[in-house]
Length: 450
Image (tube, rainbow, N blue to C red):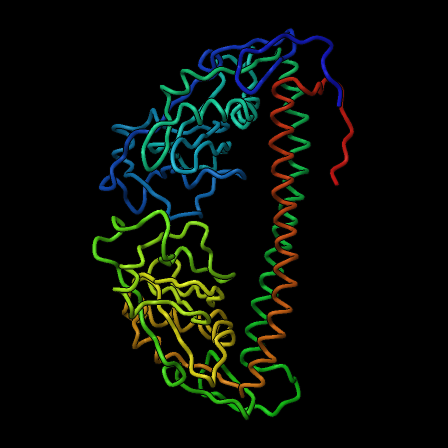
């Protein structure tokens, strides 16, 4: 990569020098920015003028399918909010929640206004500052560093126009800005296509894994075995020597955890791991952010003590139906949002875990909840789950096979995720180096992405 012929010292944190002919300027001298009004929930309607929220701003553009689209009435818009209208080509920035997401808005025929925590930005003078340069400035590491420093708030960090007023940025001459944008548009679009290709590969691998589990836990490993009708639509045919029954008949325990007296106030920095629904994942038990209770509280909650080889199932909330098997030897306890399933000797816990994570288990989670019990799964409902049970030796063979196959797929998925992270890091680094002048793109530079 080429560099500039001469540089000057920078006083900006994170940038040691910039090209000698570049200027350090207040961001507000070049960019107009406006935050949306603080709309209240009672103002939202089912139709009318669309409102852009933080969740609608994505790296790939404005997406109104990410969440339920919000509207305000046309009358209220015309009376109070026309000056918050988003126009074609506006740069949009999220200032709360997912901080610093940047995207461009393209008109699609329907008027749109800002909401709180969304900011629209435009070049004040297109003759001196290129509109398309704004997103790359905002995505650069030195500007992100300033934004993080300026963030305020408790539970949710946020910033607003008063903080953008304090922002500084480096400004090359207009022709150079345009060359930088052209260079970065080309390079980042290639990186994005690579990332999207790997994301599609991950999606296909996960679909293959799901399909494999669904097939094996209901049909077994022998394709030529005699089959029979299970009598359940979502299960279909099963091997004729398998048993079809209720889960409750093959467990010694189906129970939910409980909340210790005092709730989260009694959590301690170390002690007995206290498992919550966020710790239970299909990929296994994640204890990276686990809470802890004292041994005394743990003993007082004897009925919710977790044993090795227990199957844990989330029974409330957005992660309902997520399950995993406990492989840890250490003592643990569990809260009321998670159910403990302890199998009899005739059912391998690993096999039950695979069964619950398959369509057989997940469909029953859906039907139990959507059927009226909207608070979550009940012990009675779980006990009535219909399951398919091969002989114990066959369960062991199925578990061994699925362990091998899923681990192979998981390793490939994890490798692709690492590659995606590296590509994102490279993209971020490339943007930062170009908009701070470490790389001179006045002449096209050929670069090969591996």
